[in-house]
Image 1 (cartoon, one colour):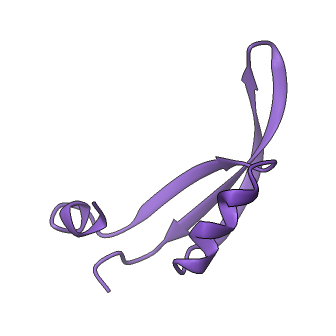
Image 2 (tube, helix red, strand yellow; image 1 turned 90 degrees about the vertical axis):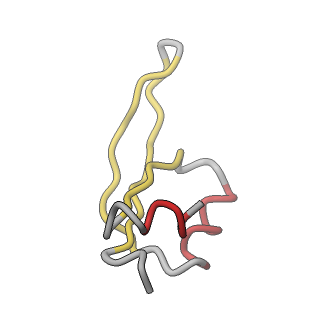
Length: 58
């Protein structure tokens, strides 16, 4: 999928719920922590984390 996106975009950002232990998957793929924030889902505020890649063409 990233190969396809790389034909149209240079960078990529994903938001992941902080409680999702699988979020470290993005770190393993070389993503960099950008910042955290909150999102409201079903009336509950949850912490989320943004990870990004400055150049997905690498």
